[in-house]
Each structure stands twice: as structure tokens, then as C-alpha cells.
Length: 637
Image 1 (cartoon, helix red, strand yellow):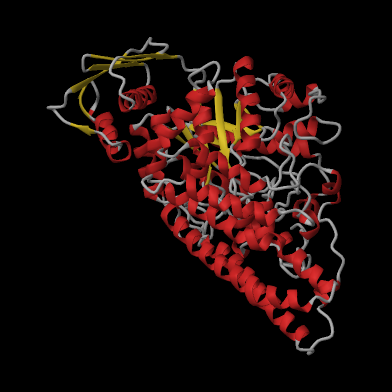
Image 2 (cartoon, rainbow, N blue to C red; image 1 turned 120 degrees about the horizontal axis):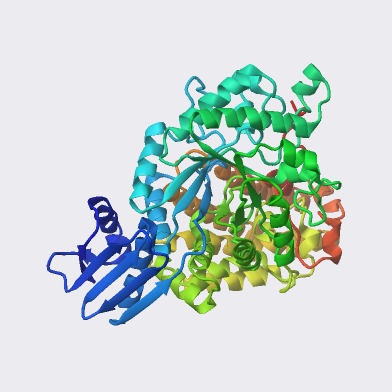
């Protein structure tokens, strides 16, 4: 396809040119199709038309133009020469939140590729979640060896996104979730607990002023997300020793006022997670309970000039969202909402859960008049997957952002066009977490793709969960399904290499612990020998191939920092398999009378799984790898 552009700024034309390779078109003065861009400040809808090789996009804001350009490209690619499309934006702000703090810090090439796809989808914002992965003057340990962004890098990212009408918003932490900075001795003076800052301390507020000033100076946006979620430890570490017990709400409210005085001085509009204020208002301590009634003193003592952001990732109950939105409206600022696409703590993006939750959430946002909507892409426990796996979920947000109701078939077509990947290839990732033992109708969190990969073959912490189930056969079939649905011609095909190879490993590893235990209990030395000679070495080979694929994927998308954590996990898995071979050898040759690890009864990691509809959930690698002490947890401060 060739176009001649009319009516666009030089910046927008530069942005359009950047899309040529990804979306297979060229700009030329001699092109047969002329595209007229018509910006109108009072235009409330996006209009795309084309007839007789004369195309036009009538739009209000820059990101609307790029959405329209994507719609035009899609229709022309399908052979439609007469086009008439009109869409009405549903939100003022919509975009993803990228987690740059759980080891994976997106590199420049991947970031630009992501921006291209967000632009064509029609997003106008993206948050960069950075706990300590940005520069702060006078704090060399802030983000040290963690791939932190320099101010220059962030400014370049902001410049690039701005061409497409995408507002980059820094999302930082100003109270808790700062473990990776506070672990250093150099940060002790700022430290209350392992992750929370010391309040009522002037060095802390000097640090916060430098943090906020440093990061906000890199962005055009005057919005900044100041975090403050999950701060249960506040006031319970060194602060408690220094000052005694103080009411947490009072501590948080006073701290928020100090932080807002900094943002106000810098001309910034602050956003914060709302869970702590609603938790402190709840009699049960629940983050977001429909039964919570907000006491007047909490409303009266919560500053007016901060936007509260309600986060919810797993509820498909529309009445739940409606109740929580009503609670938020007791406060003064209009609330924002953050849902999620479940890429975290798993090797298989959970579209089954995400789509159900986001359908309810986004419909409820429209009903409640919520105007600022984000999709979080967390990277908990080391970011073993990639935000590119979430693209179909992001496309779903984009379609909701331009339609009151979303047609599923239209969403699938848009996903395929905007990403270059068959929508089914994304959706099949859910199947990594839905082997036998997981009910089709269940929307509970479950991540067997992760815990079956990392659990030890001799200790078998999760073996009871898959006992008697043909899980290995399931993963063998799934590996083949992923291989068949992949498209080598797609620029993003490489992101399916890791899921395919995870399935290949689990085809043998998922059940091998139970096989070893059964053979040992029945004194079946022939089976033990066969597992030792054939199965365990093959698992090692497959894990090594998986590690190589994972390393390749990581280096294409992220800075190098952080992959050492993943490398160590693969190395541990291989080492333990080699130890299992050694232990079996010692037993079969009579050098030891017993394999102590196989003498132990297998118990459920979570007893509730026995009566549940999933294979269970675990949030942490170190709990999957061993029931023994992985690291010694000191007092909270």
C-alpha cells in the first residue's frame, strides 16, 4: 500500500513513517491513495472514509488519528476500497501500565515497537511503573545494577511516544514497595521496614523531593502516580521503636499531605492507589469490600487534590465494581480505574480470567462514568513472561475505549491486524494454566505452568496436586498446538518460543515426581532405572533449550539486568535433576539404603486444592523450589 499524506504536521508524518515496516505500507508523493487528515477541535467522534482513492481521517486528538489510520490500513488490506467508519471515544485516558521494576526493564527497540502497536490500537497514555529504576541525584544505589533508566533515556521515550499522541506517565512509589532500594546500607536512614519509608523524618522528605523532581522532569505529562499501595507495614518497624504506636490512617494522611506539597510545588497532578484508605475504612481489613462504609473522618482527612485509582484484577461481578466506584465517589476527586492482563506469576498469560474480569470492569467503568482507565501488566516474582503476551488483552481495552459494546469477532480481527499475530495464538497461552484438574468454568487464580516447572523432582511440593492426572500428556499436546498455530513470518513470533518449550519440558516433568515416588514405593527398580537413564536426562536437555529461548527473548525485549535471576532458576532446576540422578544411582548401586526425599509422604501445598476447581496457586519461586529455608527473613526492619 502507498499513501500520499496531506494535512499532517512534520512530527506526525515522522511518526507515520516509523510505522511503515511494521504495517507494510509506504509514503510517496506519487502514491495512488491520498490520505487527508482533518483535525477539528469540536469533533466528538473519529471518522474514517475512503472512496475513489481519496481517504480522510477526521479527528480531534493525535491518538485518534493513529487509531483511524490503523482502521484504514486494516480495511484496505482486506480489499475494501469504499470505507465509512465512525467511532466514539468512551474514555478521556486509556492505556497500559508497564512494570519496569520486577527485573525486566524494557529496552529502546522493544519500547518503540510497543508504542507502534499502542498507537495503531488507539491508546493515548501509558504508565511506566518504576520503583527504583530511574535516576535520583545524590543516590547512586537507587536502581543500582537494576537497569535503571537515565534521565536522557526517559526523555527520549517521552519524545517518541508524544509523536503518536501517547502521554507517558511516571508511576513511582513514595511510601512502600521500595525493598530494592532500602536493602542497601546506604539507604538505612530512610528505612522503616524492609519496603516502607521512615515517616516523620526530614531525610525521607528530602529523598522524596529529589525522587519526584528527578522523574517528573523527564516527562511532558504533569501527572504522576505516587503509589502508596499495600503499605501495611507502615509505622511498624524502626518507626515503632523510635516513636511508639501511631494510628496508621493518621500516619498515611499526614504523609500524603507532605508528598502532595512536593507535587503541588512542582506543578504536578498526583494519582495514588486507593487500597490502603479503603482497607483502613473496612472493619474486616479487606482492600475492596462491597460492605465497606467510608467513615466521615477518613473522607474529611483525605486530601482533595489527589486522584484515587481503584485496582481490581480478578472479579467478574459487575455489582462489585459498581459498589466500589460508589465508595470512591465519597471522596472529592473523580476516581480512576486499573484492571489487568494477567501476565504475572505465570508462563501462560491468563486470558480466561483476564477477559472475564475486564469485560465486567470496563462495562462498569462506562456505567459509572469513569474516564481514566489503565491495564496493569505486573511482573511479580521476576517477570518470567513479557508484556507482548498481553497484546490481545490490550486490544480488548482499546476496543472498549471506542465502542459502548465490544463485538468479539471485531476484537479478534483488530488484534490480528494490530499485532500481526493470530488472536488464537494469544488465547492459547491460557491453556498453559488449565491442564486436567482445573474446571473449565473456574475463574480462580492458578499457575501450574510455573510451579510444575520450578518444583523439585525429588521433593515434589506440588506432586499431590497432579497425582493421577494426565498432565504430561496434556502439555505434550499443547506444545504441538502452539507450534502449529505459530507464524514464522510474524515479527512477534519469537514470543511464543518460551511457552512452547515450557510445554515441552512439562510434557515430561509435570508427572515425573509422582512416577519416581511410585516406582520407589513399589521397589520397581526397572522403572527407576528407566526414569534415570531416559526421562531425567531428556528433561535436562529440554530445560537447557528453554533457558536458551528465554535468554534470547529477554535480550530482545529488555535490558540485560535481571536475567541473572531467571538464569539462576534454570541452573537450579538442572542441578537438582543431576542430583536426582546421583541419588538414584546411589540407591540402585546399594551405596545408600534409602532415598530420604522419596520416603516422605506427599501432601497438598494448599489443602483447599483437594476440594477446589484448580490446581492451586503460588506467588513465589522460592516456595515452589523447596520447603526448606531459601533465605533467612530478618525482622521487618
